[in-house]
Length: 464
Image (cartoon, rainbow, N blue to C red; front, side, top):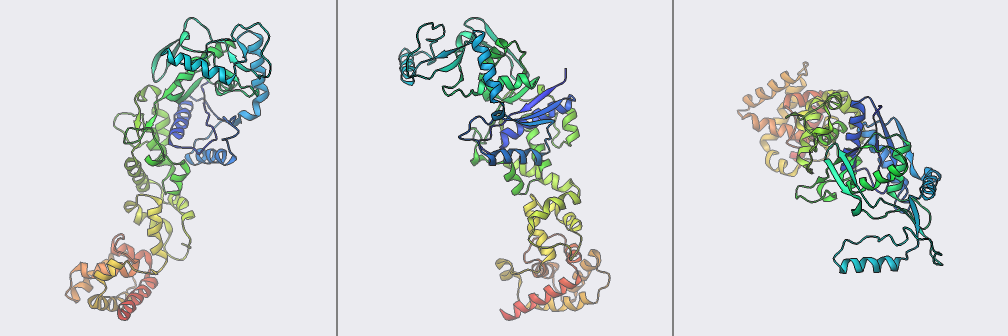
């Protein structure tokens, strides 16, 4: 058997954390077993679906590196097939037309609730053979078995048994003829040969209904794996206030896709105490039996930590590629961007952090940090800047070690502590107090720019 999994989002919003994790688990399972991963866009909700959401899903999948073998398939392009199956179910006696009005259904439910019964359709038109009432466009309901039970051997939840007596006859086609979710997903999984349906556990209640429809069609059910939901740190369902934004927002916020994927795979799955996984390790080690049965908690701090680890270890060339879109300046006139990245990688939590720091390696400060100026720009600093201009001008070996020694020598010659020289110098050349080792920072900024910035800083003190 060739394993075939699918990710089937509705384009009614962006690809979010929960959906991305479901896609990742489905992708990993297919890749681990040498199978195929299918992308299906469930866009039958025309009022809420949008092209922008479809594109956001496609962009998110591409950014995360979750390549699909087939698709994207769109349900709106399969309406003829759904109508064919609905007619097949009617013809075989597994479905029927229901003429209940909205008012009748509301009265039915109100009476059931008054009797403290579970509100549900009572099967009024299940075996109806009379004359249909006028003026009512019927819905089509699936004739659910009245006896027996549905057994779901879920790869995550374990054995789940649901009595057919607990299920009512669900609507498979609305009064306008459009199919409902539980019908379309069954037809798609059947036609696309899906062997494993890995999805959120909010769909677990749909599984017995879908299995019964598949049985009526003489089709085999996929093997189900219902992944527990993701909660916020307050224990409530994940939402925007917890950080559950669009996957592409994480790109905008400066996260590496590898870091987000690594975080997602650890959100409910584990392999011992290992935290960092390469893509190849994920594929080799991933197993649905190791997915937690309980809900996972989304921790933004842990995600940020993960991103820091990837910024430290990812090849400079790859980081440079991800950074370029975040600059409004050129990096060609100066040190190689990869060298600057190597200097900043241990000091950055996100690409956005790094991009801000990259700026001072290529552009003179347009302004200085006010608190830093108040604390460090004084008559002593003016003397330091003037002396350093002369000292640096005579240096031919413009390397980090030579420059750091020159700063130490300058402090000794003026009878100052290293901090009284190094910190004002840092502010003068970067605009602030936070930068890599002073020698390395000087080397990467370059001799001409350092001398110019020292001159500018000295003039700013003189004008104050």
